[in-house]
Image (cartoon, rainbow, N blue to C red; front, side, top):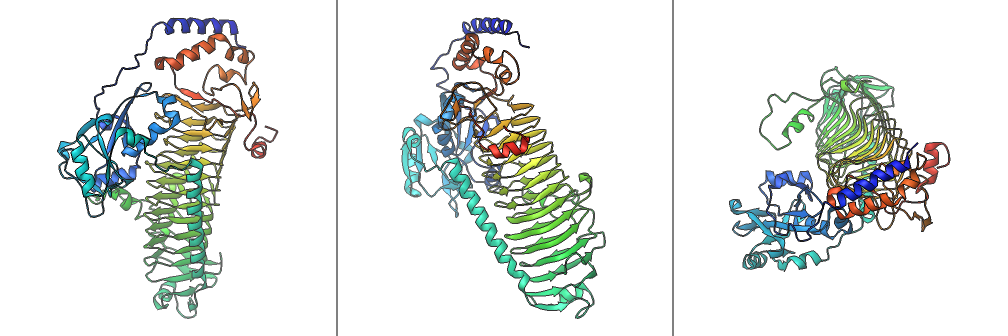
Length: 630
């Protein structure tokens, strides 16, 4: 039981002691000196875009902002990202006022556009910084970066005007740039657009590849040709090789558009337990209705002799050359359907295959994930994985630079990771059921605009772990995990998730407090939120916070009239300890919080919900998860 009188006395003493020892100079830090950009906490473009710019010697205008209540300098790839952050109403609340804004100075850099209108510098040694208030900005020109249109800053108006005249732009000062109305749809609108776009694209691929099952039969193995390899060699392009029930030797190569059609599990293609069982080197190859085993055991090749090449050459060689049940090279428009795979390495490996579809299949790997590799491994192009059951192995779906991939309506159990995205943006991971993994869905290596929607992850070390930036996590169910949601992706949107009965509900790993966290049901977790890194965050948007359980207070318009701090030692007692409510509403606590709002040095890491919800957002789902009324 809490001794309320003791805690009140201690809080009052701390407030009186610290409140008299600090003063804030509102004009401090107006004249700031640039820091090395590598030492800033960065926002803006994706890691892939930045990597591309560096590899191609393209230029990205940058910004640095020094905030009055934030100890780190924030760096921005792209001037529009500076403006977007400063225009966000929550930025001042969480970071304080901008004490100084610096931007790249292109005077003396001899900036130009290449043949694709990407911004380049012909004299990059001269680059420096200029205060945004003293800079001139070229907007609406043809200049762009891998992340989109570029705003190009100059310390001299004449230089800005010369660039604008050459490349069809116009010149604005800082105030005009900050006030410029750029169409920025709401997070829900952007999420719905990506969901609709990727869903419609996936539906088209499923429909288009279904026609591959209707090709006329040209060769029947065992009747028209003695072996599968001989049948593939004999069959004309765009026809079907039929495999009746039986066992067939694998390690074959399909070098033309063909369909290999079995009779179900009774048709068994068996490899030599070395290498890949079926290799397809042509587009529009289909493998349907059969069983595959006998793959080699090499998931990744040795990197000893790899040198040079593109920045991701190691991944290209190590992962892209592993053994598999089916491997596609240039597999555009191909299909795997109704296939059961047992593999010691990869199930389906795709090295380039836009619109390839893997559906209605089962892929089984070793029981110990260290002994297996990837169920579906997709590199460089988006594929569709739909209604596939994955059991065992390392990762069910692994992607590398497969922007726009769709993984939906699948089941994943007893793996390291369910879905593992690397350098992959604008992916849709939707309506998957995941159990018994280290992490259900993990999004890594600075991707952008991924949508994780409607997934159900339970009994895993972590449900969803999201890095990169500006992703959308919504309508998911995370329960009975060590961590429900781990979020390290700034400017991301979390809404309508049920996060219940986990060790930690939400783990906020950001040093940049830029999340939108609203209308989630976060209940019954060992720790509702873990946010020990970085500064204070606000988990409220448009007057709507989150449901944390039955909080005391007066409900008005669906929200409680008192703010709630799920990471605070005081508010943590409200639902769990006698005397907690008295302590939270005491004058000493109110005074301490008032002083913390005025003095950044006293504001600790943590989360504040200014409008906690009085009722669950998804009561029926929460009831099913808890087995009782919420």
